Amino acid sequence: MAPDPGRMRLRNSARAVIGVAAAVALAEVCGLSLTASITGGLAALLALFTVLDADVRAQRRTTALLPVAGFPVLTLATTLHGVPLARDAAFLAVVFAGVYARRFGPRGHALGIFAFMMFFVTQFLHARPGQLPELYAAVGLALLAAGAVRFGLWPIERRTPPPAAPPGLPGTGLARPTTRQAFQATAACAFALGIGQALSDDRWYWAVGTAWWIFVNTASRGETLVRGFRRVLGTVVGIAAGLLIAVPLHGAPVPTAALVAVCVFGIFYTAAPSYSWMMFFVTVMAGLLYGLLGVLHPGLLLLRFQETAIGALGAALAVVLILPVTTHAANDAWIQRALHCVRASTAAALERLAGDPDADPAPHAAELELLLGRVRMALAPLVHPLSPLRARKARARQVLALLDDCARDVRGLVAVAADPQASHDARLAAACWRVEAAVEALTAPHGGAPGPATVPHPRPAAAEPALAHLHGLEHTLVALATPLRTDPRAPLVISA
Image (cartoon, rainbow, N blue to C red; front, side):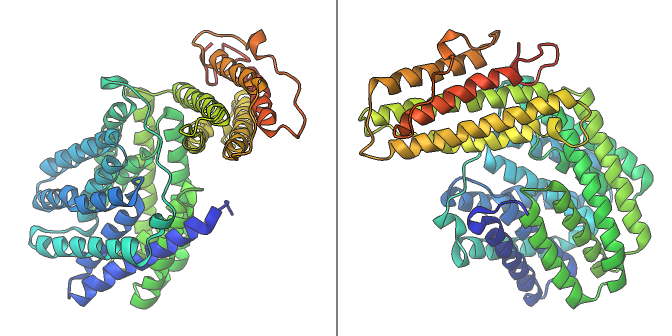
């Protein structure tokens, strides 16, 4: 029920079903085994799901580089299948490298996930070295099929370029969040691997996969804990559905293939608004694939839940005990970036209204929307329904509402600045300076409430739209001082 502007999620999900189906069909036509077909389907799903570069050319390059990351891992995983200690060490090395690669942006993120999942799928399918040629063929054919669908048959991004993801939080060495997360994820996966193998010699990889995926798209301790809870919740509901759907099918090919297509659609359609729903579809799809392999039974689904719980526990312990990035620190960083982006948007709009044709506030406004999305993720632990911190929850909700008001006024100001007939007078410059002063007061390391320079002026008449938006920003920024600095002993975002 989440909004879907331009039906982008709907179109992307439908395209994913076509791409995965084409990959599997191509493998079957070429006479490859069921193991190879499943590997190819997963490769196509990952190519369509994880490649999120900001332009089509970069997406093509990343897709072309996926085999460079995936084939060596496939070789390593299948070769070491019968050597448990070496296999486990190699898996943890892939985990560390895959998470560390996120520091290189969307391409590193996609290549790291693809490498990890190639190791994971060999454990899932119990692949052997003799199957390597057909696994290579299946992955290569799948990437060709996915690329043909994405860049040829249905090039959604060519008409509507995806928004560029905001760069990660800054830092060097262990101060860099992605470096810390690499150590955290490796420790969590090591815990999951050890306890998971004690529980099951055959299905331990589910615990490792859970720990790994909980760390994807998170940046703080709170985000990781919330994501772990949502993963367990989605898995439990998915197991219940699997008992009702997958078990009775007994691996019947046609209905299983149809339901797998529904699950692929559901994974893509729900990924952005609800991680729990995405995990529901992942769990149901896993049950269906086990049915195709002829190994599905209710006890296996129970084991799936147990391994998932172990992986979630490993992730929780890692983010609490190993180089933690606190929720407060992440909130502080992302909200400061959003506020500085508000100031940049305002300054560029003022220059445009003053007659500078090269000044363009639109890119700053687009960046603000992305940063606000990241702020919502950072504040998600505080506004979660199960959060016991009621005062901070109320303040976090107030911060989100006020930042949304800022974005609305920035969008209005950009629209006014784009009008060549829009006027400019001295009051606009004065209002812009007050907005900048309000941002400086909010983001100062040891500042207090905004001073006299940011006391809001009366709102102007509706006939002055640019001034109205600037005064709206001024009022909102002054109002933000209350939830951000209400109680220095219980920090929410900006340090006091």
